[in-house]
Length: 157
Image (cartoon, rainbow, N blue to C red; front, side, top):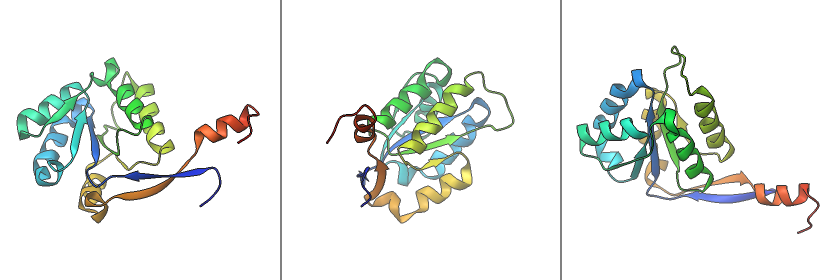
């Protein structure tokens, strides 16, 4: 194990965030319906309208946060930083400008910082849910940001 890193475990029962830009919401709803048997074994959450649409169409229990432009992306990013979200499925529309693009970039960045799987399109989402890791615990190495901060301000271990 490298110094400065900690091992985090993504549990067997994943906590999955489901997000979609407006033009991709129906595609994500359809994808969730297709993968309902896998998704129902995990904890689901999502941004406002997306969570509601998925729940209504599939019967899956999806905890709703605020709408993305109203802070939902940031709420999900905070849950990632708290270790409360393990995987993100985010059907992005790369061809349409998003008024809350800085929030989206911040969400994707925090997911990368904490080394969690993020699918931004259907093909990647398919690969994730078909992976054997979807049903198993997964240990991964993440930089120990607290220790790095303490060292940066001169506090010794």
